[in-house]
Length: 123
Image (cartoon, rainbow, N blue to C red; front, side):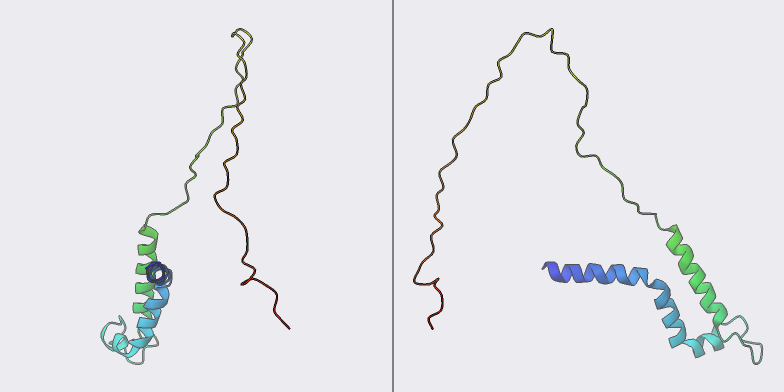
């Protein structure tokens, strides 16, 4: 269950980071169609553009889209804070410091190995 989820999550993160690669790959896969139908210079004969203007526009749009996404930064969360102030105890009555030692619990298991199973190989 965890492995497919981790794989899907990793692929989603990878595809998001390689979005410019997907735009460029799509451009080169459809370069002839883009040069004939979508290029700004498609009516100019022997134009050296060959659809590069469309690629640059799409890459610029993709970059703007990435910049519009919220900037995710790590935030520091303080989970523990120790007070470092001293408390004046001279005016307080004296309290006895009681230390209680609790006996160790008895183990309910034994570390004994079965000699019939665990033994050196017979040569």
